[in-house]
Image (cartoon, rainbow, N blue to C red; front, side):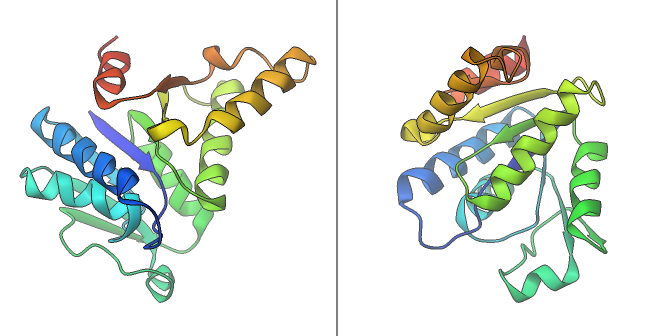
Length: 176
């Protein structure tokens, strides 16, 4: 299975996030899954990629060449696809992936998450979306989504994505 991960490329984040992302990458490779990601070499994105590569797995990076001006690109990718824009990057993720895992991140990660969830809601795909809620990172977002649902703005979030608090739970969702 090709699994896309969304997550921060920041070098400033706590090791609790990068350690969990590294373990996720190791487990993905051990289970024979291919990582699809934004091609970054730092943050949770880079940690997951390093876990995949250290476990002899495969990865597909997708990014515009100019993104290298903002963060270093991972040179260990099995395949790297250069695109012209961030929109084409996200379309590449959708086209190349069988499932999505959202790790902790910032504005870019939230953009990717809400777009892929919206596309699922609009029935443009039916792929599994799992939010890896490392150390409760997304709890406040879930509270906001629940409130939006309670006030009639959303369908039940469980229909669109699943929440995993550890790596085993991720693969339980994927195996279902």
